[in-house]
Image 1 (cartoon, rainbow, N blue to C red):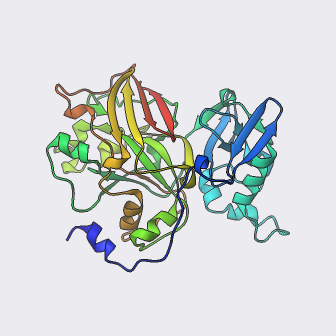
Image 2: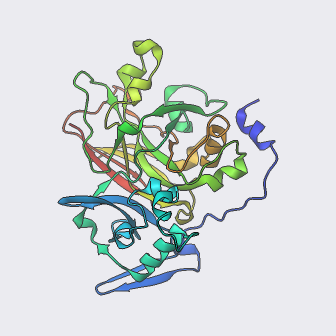
Length: 346
């Protein structure tokens, strides 16, 4: 029996989590700053970013209230807030232990207060975005998870999620260069929706999977096809996926509450301005909460873990003739409402 139906037969916990976008709720507040105005529904409806100054300096964790808008450097305002999203999701335990007078300090509440006050605001033009999550314990991927991608290869959809992995060392910033290995000439693009895990979880059913998702971001699963589609490395394609800079990510992690419908988002890739992938997350065979629940049957997921959910049709190697990335190309990747990557290929 396919995995999905086995999971649906498990006992269902009464966990209901509203997944609404800020425009549809009634909890907005406005932040007033000279020359600027922000509107948000609180810390749970936000875009978390990691960045440094345009000219360098320390890393900060920030909140960008709208795509392309100014950034509030929350970790610069309060030293108890970690400067990385992974530590933030872990609760910043080491730092919070120092706050002896506040034993049950809630980091999300702290961020909400800082945003409401509009403190430490930085224009986007003055920052260099880093990948929004780094040094994760696990960087997992799902293969063959879009119906169109299966069709373009002439294969049937899998009966259960196809799981493989990349490494944290492949993570690349949303504006950083993709470095082609010297002897590779068949390097391909794969635009992907990425899940960011918000808390430790294990052995979930499908209803519980949603609860462990903190938010979503944009990813590119860069792939060396000559190492994937051959007998090299004994037929294992780990090396095809795990080369340095082969996972551009970002620019923001958008909290799940800020996404109107995660199962209906356009997913697009351009190479040198030419549209190559034009898909939609409604084509996902296994939905995000199902993926999280499935993986949790085998391993414990931890805060900051990232799961790439698959790519739609339009990859290079299925084209006639096949197309691959070349040095000097500009690769752009966008998921509506989440963000856009722009990476030059060197």
